[in-house]
Amino acid sequence: MPGKRDSKWQYFWVPVIGPAIGGIYGGLFYQALFEATPTLTFWIFSCFIIVLFGIALSKELKTATM
Image (tube, rainbow, N blue to C red; front, side, top):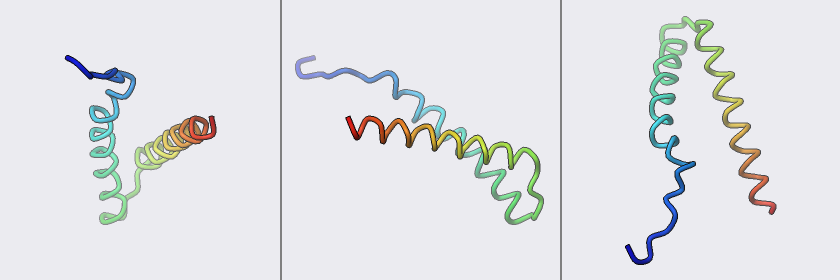
């Protein structure tokens, strides 16, 4: 196709994996907040999400300064 650019396949996991992770975390968050039963799974998943956001933010800041 004329004018078609790179598909950027390194980005494909965001719309595929992101909603699945968000759905799982949403369920755990609901259970922890409204049923007042924060499980070990909730805390582990929360730490995973924080680390994931930290990695993404550091990569974004690194590319923004270049």
